[in-house]
Length: 244
Image 1 (cartoon, rainbow, N blue to C red):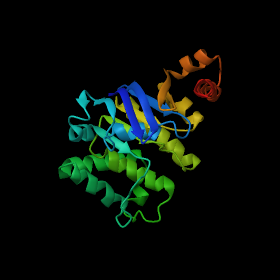
Image 2 (cartoon, rainbow, N blue to C red; image 1 turned 30 degrees about the horizontal axis):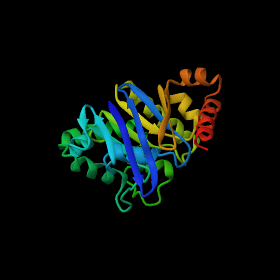
Image 3 (spheres, one colour; image 1 turned 45 degrees about the vertical axis):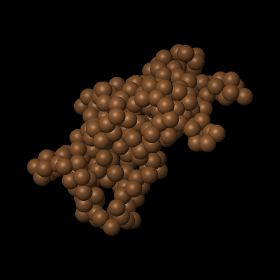
Image 4 (cartoon, rainbow, N blue to C red; image 1 turned 90 degrees about the vertical axis):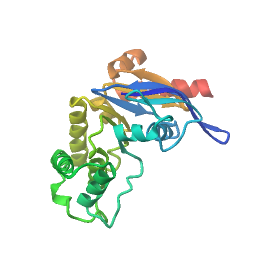
């Protein structure tokens, strides 16, 4: 479980995150939504300890990220906005390198490696250098690398960005599998169809603040809209009006 409490982050005079708080629970997919510049990626970077908050607290399975960032990183599997593969290594070598950084023994590495390769349907690209990979192939490799140590909490920053239809469908199935295994899955997306299909709970951020934190059905009921995209637009439109 990931708990976020009153997070603040400013860059000079710009308040990128201004008191964000929410909980992403085990066995659920939580969607983090908002317009460009709302503070989503900055929030995620603070959750996986790439960036320190100016104020506030992040707890991952009860561990304070500021007090013990290394312990938090061990409990997290992260697909950041920059995929960052080592291009001269094969997909297999990228995955195994991260497994060894996490201290996995050979038997555990092989077991986890095989399970992820099958789940992500990537056996055909394992022994190719990642340089020249398609976007979908890069994402699969980056996700396998991020999850090789079997983390209970998974953070995905726009995982389907740039993927074709088949790759997107495969990744959605994989995210549902992670949820069904009882993991906490938190992801950001701009694709309403994806959010509607996957999310148990939706957190909407605008101007660095949480403006909604509900189930999809509750968001639709709250706004009087039957379509989730229309509900999102209404929530963001109301917030823009208040900020003006």
